[in-house]
Image 1: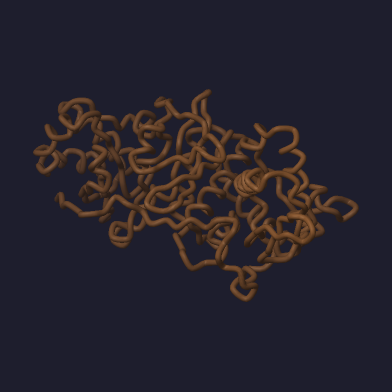
Image 2: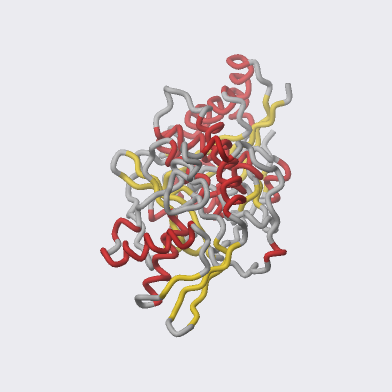
Length: 395
């Protein structure tokens, strides 16, 4: 039997920046689970970190250089100097260029250095000369422990990839894993970190995005973090496949509270592998201080790759059947289809409300996969001509 579930399309996300308002040391608590791997196992023979600019452990894959690669020679010198200051937890560095340059460099470090979860705030002071002053929310040992724990969690996820997966399938696996295993948490102090998302499994948009970027790095998939606005400041990802860039917003592909409460394992794909045109329906991409890549490719879009596009009324049942049976085969609780035009969607409306038309799909699921199912659908992203079939397993 079909039923309509009313659900809002907006997901909740708050932005946690590198200069957080949470400045009190007492406001930050050391993470609860302790160290997964002792520090000595992760250092070189002389017991020093792998990266000589830091006094803490930096796992492989936690550094990218997309934005900083465009820096001038002077900016690169300052970038390296600030990395050493932050890496050794020094509290200040001379301001030798315009403050806007330092702001740009610090934003690049925040985006590109995923192993730097410790910067709580920064500001400028004059002490005979202008200086940039930093405040930290944890010690070097605590940073090492968090990074080691995040590395172990990430390696466990990477170990679940199979040799037959292409890059699209790996990205979809990372996307789905974070949605199913991480909860949005506004109160958790480290919701802006890889550690929060992968170990404590609590995050906001920055934590989701950084964890996704780290997994992409480990899988060898070129990517970059993007900042912008929705109804709040926001962060998400872009990935490059076959020469084309695509947007991925894990945070906004989590269902809202109402839908999640009823069907907690539903995964949405409205913002998985999409173009600039799609992301700009709800997102504003920051053009300063960095310019994100342009995304025009459609070949790796979810609906194109999964064969879930409906271009005519006559395709409704065939495309829906393929999507639903594929989901049943993999034990998934939902399947999504997208209509090419509003006219096609309107033409299909009566058919969608005729449950008799979908009975053969239900029967086929039982015959082919031995699963008794109940179908319903929700217009969670209906304004973008997307429908999500909800699959309830009753056997």
